[in-house]
View 1 (cartoon, rainbow, N blue to C red):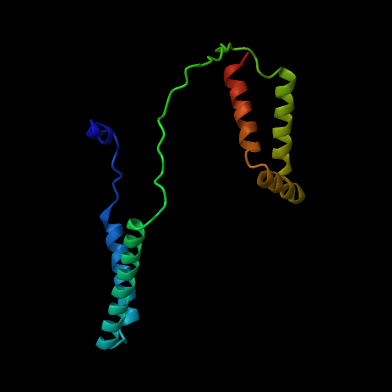
View 2: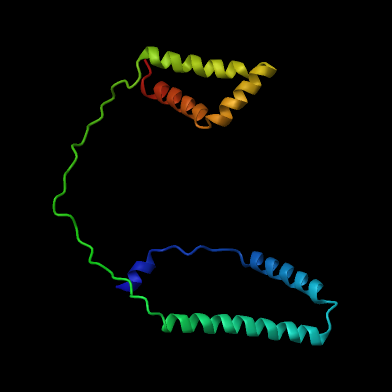
Amino acid sequence: MMWSVFKNQKEIKVNPKYYLLIQDKWAKKMNRLTSNLSRRSLVIYLMLFITASGSISIYNIYGAFSSKEKPVAIGIISNSTSVVMKPVQVRTNDRVLSKVEFEKIFRINSYLDSLKQSKEGQKLYDSIKNYRPGLLDSLVFVENYYKTNFKK
């Protein structure tokens, strides 16, 4: 049963040449950093690293076993017995926008396009684009939606 959960998951495939490239760059950098150190100093640094990482590991293992904290309580998950179903609204092909509203949106879009013609207008257009990043996409979306769904 447990394997069926993992069976449906897709494995992300990464090209191993990137790992080898990073490994090669790291090895060259470490070689450059340690090329002028003597064998004795390299052994001392290795011993310091082993001592530090070993002591941190021992400290963490000791702290895990000697902790006096209470374990985390896991509650039972229960389903709600009172489920309220929301009424489903059936959408019809009614016009969401009136013709007047669509014309206003079209005029705003054409006004924004006309701003690009002058240098000062371009600054205003860029500031609108920066402060309202989704506005231009929304105008294009509404215009295309209206044209495709409500053609006469």
